[in-house]
Image (cartoon, rainbow, N blue to C red; front, side, top):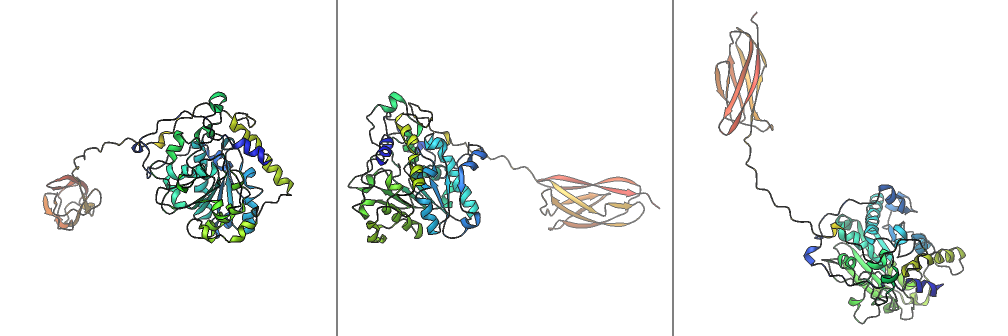
Amino acid sequence: MRRRLVLGAAVLGAALAPAAPALAADYAPVDQPGPGLSPSPAALAAALKCESTDAALAAAPNPVLFVPATGVTPEQNYDWNWKPALRKAGIPFCTIELPERSLADIQTAGEYVTYAIREVHRRSGRRISLIGHSQGGMVFRWALRFWPDTRSMVDDAIGFAGSNHGSTALSALPTCAALGCPVASLQQDARSKFIAAVNSRQETFAGISYTNIRTRFDEVVTPSDVQDPRTASSSLTTGDGRITNVAIQDVCPGDVSEHLLVGTTSNTSYALAMDALTHDGPADPSRIPPLTCAATLMPGVDATNLEGNVTALGALTGLASVVGVNLAGVPVVKEEPALKSYVFAKAATPTPAPAAAAKPRARVRVTPGRVRAGRTTTLRIRTTTTAGKTLGRVRVRVLGRTVTTNAKGRATVRVRPSKAGLVTARATKSGVRSGTKRVRVLRAR
């Protein structure tokens, strides 16, 4: 089974014509808000599955969101290994299923991950941890890069053989050019426009701990067996995040897990990931106990579990589709799709010239609003702007009398109207538009 899985995944980075990279200034600034999500709310909600209740998600420790690899479902990736391990550890978790078994446009997959981050954070009220294998260890970075609001929602970002810088493996073969490949395969070529975009400006962000776990025997996400860990495809080096880049052989030299097993069965990978989940910051290889290397399989994996083995075998159809043997029935293309418009910096909008400030208008209030002809009445006057702000030193003329309000916009005036009818109180002041108020004069008794 292992040989067949490896064969199916090994052409992740098949041929793609080199793309001219965009200039750094062309990409969206890291604080440019992301767009609304294009998948329907129903599709997004259906893709997220949380085994844990909202109450459990809200309890310590932080909940985990699992993101699957290329060609597989979350069940095929995590049901038979990581889920039972986290249940035993008491860590709540959710999974997000990506379109077409993660073989469709990764830009759209990133929108599903964006939704999942927001929703698990909302349900739990806590910062969450992300765990992903292969594409799953990279695609959450698309969400963090182009939807800045998600960054404050994430504590740990843990990737197993994450295709952070794409794959150089077998890029000389004409497989995709001749037969076509699923979109996600083209996008994970090391020379793709997608890979350039996800790494644009900076790779990591402040407040997030990044643990990038690789194997020196990775035949898919390459280069992997390098002297300088900074040049490994899975490694991250730029930005403000806290970063650990580690090969499992740096901890356990005898661990021979390759691309698939590093994220599914390796006890070394498990120990590093759990170290990150249970400590502040990313994993620290020096904290991994030596006895870790004595076990081959991570907790949760049972070699005699028939159901688990069937689940793992179910991934073969998706993995085979990467080479153009389209057993999964997903569409194939020969060219990488264009990058979405939100990937690029928005054109600067010219700042309009400030409009001339409109003059405020005076408002005059007269109390009482009714007086009787032939009777002397004291009117109380108050002047403000129409916005309700005090307006003092205003001249008010009413029933043949003129009075100026004080600094607080108040004045009184005695009047004795001679006949019934409506009269106008008019307020005037230099630099202010005049205001008026009607006062009713009742008939004399």
